[in-house]
Image (tube, rainbow, N blue to C red):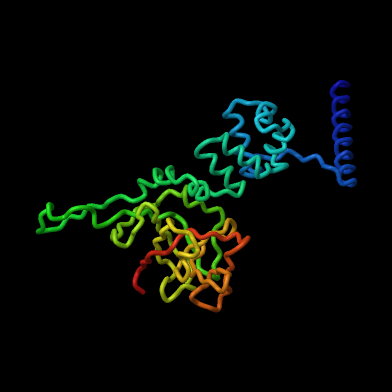
Length: 288
């Protein structure tokens, strides 16, 4: 009984000292002791880092050596105390491989679209299955008189592009989004079928042409501003998502303008975080 009582006293003393140390470090502005977090409270990046290290069967010290970092740094990553730098995220992506690499590269500010633009051969290979020829049976007409496909299947992605005045979704990666269905489109309407995607629209500031709930087809093969001036385009921002607007040039400044001019324009030049995804080819929706 005396031993149990001594253990309880010792435990209370340890707890008291730890609490005092925590208060002192807070008072003097030093790094404070971070209480353990549950997995539910940890950021997603720390959970993925921890899972990746365990899959590689590496200790924190061994994992840190791959990046010329200490085991303490790896521990701080996994506890969600400190997020890896952009350079560390790039190295993590290189080590992780597909598909986890895309997650780490996005954290570094690099989108898969940026990667694919510098890998044209790989880009073409990955897009070969994007558009599928759709055979059409014509009643009363011999098949021999019909050569080639008159329609192509274009993927409808589970993403939404907003118009001015609406709030978009952040963190969208068009290259990694799996189609929710395929839409048959006239082949003449899709000059670059392997680079064409469809998405839904939210908002009415591009009316009367494009209305809320419409589906738009976007050709992502051309993103150069000089080729798209005056066209309806889709632009993307890492935090604000996808925006449907018209690309206009004022002197030397490019901007995204809504067809409903009461909305402010969005500059898209220089250090702007907006980038062009592609040109809107056509749109469709239910009659109203």
